[in-house]
Structure formats: C-alpha cells, structure tokens
Amino acid sequence: MQRLIPRLRADGVELELIMLIRTVLAASKEIAFRVSQGALSGVLGSTLDENIQGETQKKLDVLSNQLIKDMLLSSPDVRAIASEEEDDVVKGQEGAPYIVAFDPLDGSSNIDINGQIGTIFTIYPARDDVPADSPLQFAQPGKNQVCAGYVLYGPSALLVMTTGGPTRQYTLDRTHGGYLLTKPELSIPEQTSEFSINMANFHRWQQPIKDYISELQMGKDGARGRQFNMRWNGAMVGDVHRILSRGGIFLYPANQDQPTKPGKLRLLYEANPMAMLVEQAGGLASNGEQRILDIQPSDLHQRVPVITGSQEEVEYVLDKLK
Ligand code: P6P
Image (cartoon, rainbow, N blue to C red; front, side):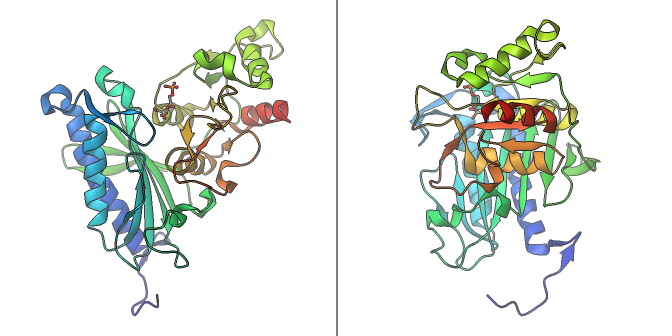
C-alpha cells in the first residue's frame, strides 16, 4: 500500500512499529499489576477449559490473552494476531502493516506457586499475498521477525527486546509506569557450565542427547573434565533470561515416544522470538538439525525441539547430533 507521507523513524525503526510495541507493553503493565497482586486480584487457579494445546487454562492465561488481544485489535497497525490461547488467527485491520503472535503467559504452571512467568511476543510484516486472517500470514520463517521480546514477571518486571539490533533489557518503573533501559546490550558468554533441561524426560531422548547430558553429570570425572550445574525453571522465559544474563544452554529435545510431536515448545510464539533474542545477544538457537530462524513453518501451533544458548556449548551438542 503506497504511503502518502514518509514514515518517521526513530533508531531506524518505523514509527508504526514503535507505536505497536507500546501497545503490547501497555497490556503487559496491566498483567504485571495483576500478577503482583496474586490471590488479591482473584487471578489464581484454573478454569474448566482446555486450550488447543490440550492444556488446562489458568485464569491468568485467559485474562492475559484477552488483555493483549483487545489492545492489539484496537491498533490500526495490526492485520492479524495469533496466540497460544487462540485456536485460529484473529483478523485485525485490513491492509495494516504488521501481524503479531504471542504466548500471553508462558510458564502458567508457575502461577499458583508464585514462580517466574512471562509474556512472549513477536512481530512480522503482514503478507499482501494471502488474506488478512489466513494462517499463511504466519507461515514465515523466524528470520522475518521485525521485533521479538518478552516481559518477565519476576521480583521486578523486565522487558527484553530486539528490533534487529542489540538485545536490550528494560525495567518497569512501577512508580511512573514506564520501562526504563537498564541493560543496553545483553551478551551471552560463548562458554558455560550451566545447563537447563527437564531430566524427567531422559528416557525419551535420542541417544546422543542422553550421552551429552550424562557427560555433564559426570563433571570433572567425565569427558568434559569440569563440573556443571543444572537449573530448570518450568518457564522458558525464565530459563532463557538466565542464559541472556549469564550464559548457559537450554534444551527441550524431541520426544522419541511421540514422533508426531517433535518437542514441546511452539515455533511461532516461543522458539522463534527466543531464538532472535539469543542470536542478537551472540548465542545460537537450533532444532538439532537447522537454525530455528530458518525453519519454514508448516502449522500455526507447530512444535519444535529447541537447543539454544552459549555458542560453543550449542555447537558441541550439534556436533554430537551429526
Ligand atoms: P515441562 C511452559 O509450559 C513451557 O511451554 C515452557 O515455557 C517451559 O520451558 C516448558 O513448557 C516446561 O515443560 O515439560 O518441564 O513442564
């Protein structure tokens, strides 16, 4: 669509994209408040419904999804949205420049135990070659993302985001209600001694992954000759934030028992945005065979294996999978 006035740009980013990001963040501030209120805001516990993933929806899942959805659908810059909590694509404004996908509340199982949870979001240019509400709007590889980010609702509410430049961190100033830049450029150390994986799934992994994890467990008595430590948050947003902050490797491998369900994490609104954030901070993100950001999506809620984090450690694992 030919624009009548030149687009204004700040820091090389289209003004419409800046306004759209602000819309997402406005919803996140309301979610951050509700999360901080916990039981006092009546948002704990589960509903009686399941989402398309087959997961029981938490009250805060539904609330967060509705907040973000309402805000985005009121924006003139959103052609369509997709959400972990929505079966199908939801149409926005015909001819608008962007589409948005989001996981409104990643790590929902942590809500009722006051654990880390977060909102993950990603923005792509809208496609003019398919209808506005077609799932094919989102059939774009992750390298097409123009913005990726998450808001981590922890002791402080942190926004971590990139628009193709450095991965930056902002802290929510609850007094004045703004996100203030607190880390201009996150950088992941190339080496690490910290891994993140759900060990309960050990029996389901491919043999090379089992061998790799066993090496880490052997520590200085094993092939690696040094001690490793393990962390598992139950929320990708918390594990990836730790890796962006101090390095590490996060793995959610394919499950050999369920070949049709290769891994648990969703490509569109978990793996791709996290992959962009990690790569822009100097790390790597792979599904074990190819770069996450190069994957051509085949389904809106498609799942992929994820191996991401410190460059040298990810490369070590990929060499074992060859
Ligand atoms: P498990 C949360 O439900 C999530 O999608 C990711 O945020 C997290 O890393 C993973 O699932 C946790 O999975 O199997 O350990 O409960």
